[in-house]
Amino acid sequence: MYLSDMHTHSIASGHGTSCTISEMAKTASKKGLKLLGITDHGPATLAAGTPSYFRSLRFSPRKRFGVEVFYGIELNILDQDGLIDLEEDLLQHLDYAIASMHTRNFRPGTEEENTRAFLNVMKNPHVKILGHCDNPTYPVDYDVLAKAAKENHVIFEINEASLEPDSYRGDTRANCLSILRCCARYQIPVLLSSDSHGKEHIGDFTYSADFIHQAMFPESLILNNQIPRLKVFLTTHE
Image: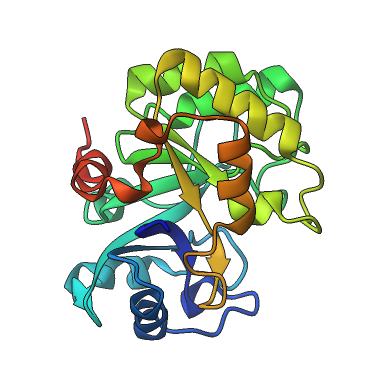
């Protein structure tokens, strides 16, 4: 059992997600989680969080149903220069950011082009997690990314939605294995993430946990149960 889930989406993300943050925290509490991350999609996602929504999160309760709540964002990477869809003055009031590529906002490029985009976005001190960079639609050089992640204090997620048998991202297993091998080589922690849109899959790591254990990845490098270490990592913006 893992005690944290730091990549989840509420009703503010749109596209069919209908749960409020309180409803999600209540579900997280029932499932035994201690720390929940709300990371709604950035404004470039159709019908997702507006700047005013992210501005208001700083006033939201930190504890709901006994669960500590962190407020972040899943940023859209918009180009190879690492341009993102939320301004600095709003980012600085969030706990952390995930940076991801979505086809609506970033046209898949070559391995070199996709890698360059991730490298540039990692220079932003608010970006702490690379979101589902296992996607075969966006080939990247994982060794290059891992070295940069180590330098910039960024980690990879192992995304549950990517590893589901019917994942819309296709077969991501080879890429996930490459991520784990690079992280083990350079001693970079990872985070299991549900990427739950709504409350149904919060804290559900059925496939990702099985995958990471079959790969014999060191438990010491999985941050989900290392709550104090995880909290310091996510909120330290160097």
